[in-house]
Structure formats: structure tokens, C-alpha cells
Image (cartoon, rainbow, N blue to C red):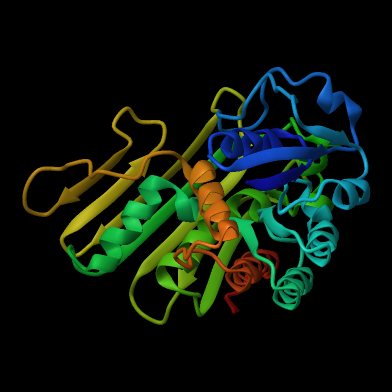
Length: 338
């Protein structure tokens, strides 16, 4: 039985709790949050994707308001850190030093130096550090990468990724809408697609970005072209300046020599492969969602199973490096070399 703790009981903390409780041989034994109201009013969810457990049942769970006390008393094997971004580095390093495996939400940290310090501590401790880049585990994105890698439909000629959201007004002390704490939509939201671009196509040679300053005071709507030294057109757009009635949308359009692969979470038929010859079809995909699949992957690794190397701390640092280069490009109006 793996003993798991959760630090931070916001939307993502609730999501992690739901996912752990769906797995065998896992017990959530401790949850820490400095806001006692989180333990009293657990009905409803906040966030731009549904699915967090509510209301919550804390039977068998020790509740803490001090992180160090939870680490000292709970005999944890593993820990989810679902805290605001600016708290990731210190809490991750503290947990790794305590001998605990860590699943830390994305973005990994606010700076490359912070991310590198986290990765270095993971290597030194010998414990697993996995960053919550859930799109690498999202079934439609997993299948898209599989089809690209297979070469069945030739080479990718163009790809566009979009992630658009209503303005996130639900965070604790409104930290998400403080760019100094969250990095704005570029670092908090758009990084999902930047990371997936890196995962599928490798690190770009250069980026060119344009951005709009928004409610966080940072880059809250951003469009980037990833340049690879060839004629592929790879772009990603992300932002959280949509009206409340818009809700949330994630989508992609991938153009290959012999097919197009398209996904839009808002459509009734969300995922299709459109071959140059033959009828469009929806391929079979993995069950679950990106959250449940990434947490199951983490748990299998903590159990000692041999799991595919889907995400490493070093790759997560590279995704930070990539988005920060995009922000620099947007600020200067120049192409930026990675």
C-alpha cells in the first residue's frame, strides 16, 4: 500500500484526490492546506475542466495546516504538490529531502534556475520527481503522437494547437491573476501545448511570439511559431481572456502528407483522423483522462514497476525554458534562439 499526501486542496488538489482514490493499493493518508476553510466547504469545484471530486470525504485522512508537520508525522511514500507555482520549488525540494516521491503540478517552477534545482535534488535523493504535464497522457494527444511517430500518414507539414479559457477567477487569494506568482497565461496555461510541441517535435531552434497583456498583468494571450530550420509550420495559441460564457476549449489540427488529425474538446465528435484516401474515422484511444493516466503512471513508478519514460524533470525544465523564450520574444518583437 502506497501512502500518499496532498499539499494544496484547490481545484487540482481535489482532482488528484479523486484520481488516487480510483487506484488500488493507494491510500491518501494526509492533506495539507493553510486555509482551514478548504476542509469545511468542499462542495462544488472550480477550474476550467470538470472532474474534481466534490464534496470530499476525509475519513481516514489526517488534515494539516503545516507542511513540515505533515512530512514529519505521516510516513508518506509519495506526495502531490498542487500548490501555487511560486511555492513549487521549496516544497518539492523539502519533500525530496525527506525521502518522498513527488508529483508536482505544472508549471514546474517560475524560472529555469528553480526547475534545475528541483531536478538536481531529485537526482541527489534518488526519488522520483514527475511534473504534471497531463497533456502527454491525454488520450487524444497520446494517439496523435502515436500516429505521427508511426509514419503511417507521412510527415507532419503543419500543426496548430489551441488552448483558450475564460479568465480564471477561482484561485486562492487570486494568485493565478498575479503574473508575478503564476507567470500569466503563457506559463500557467499555454505551457501545456508548448510542452506537447517539445514532446512530439523536439526542442525548437527558435521561437517567434506575439502576446497581449491581460488581467494578470502578464502575457495572457499568446501565439507562437516554433522554428525548426525546415518548412514545417508549427504554432500554438493560448490564453485566458475569453468571456465567462465561452468556458474552455482545447484543440489541435495536424496536417500530414496523407491525412489530417483533428481534435476539439467542445465538439460532439471531438477526435477524427481524415485520410487523403478513405473515410474519416475516430481511432480507439486509451480510457480515462490526462489526470488519471498521469497519476496512475506515477503510482506504478513508485510501486517499482518499469514504466515508459514519458516525462522527465529535465524535459520539464526545457518546457520552462521554451515558454520563457516565447515571453522574451513577445517582449522584444524578435525571433529568439533557444
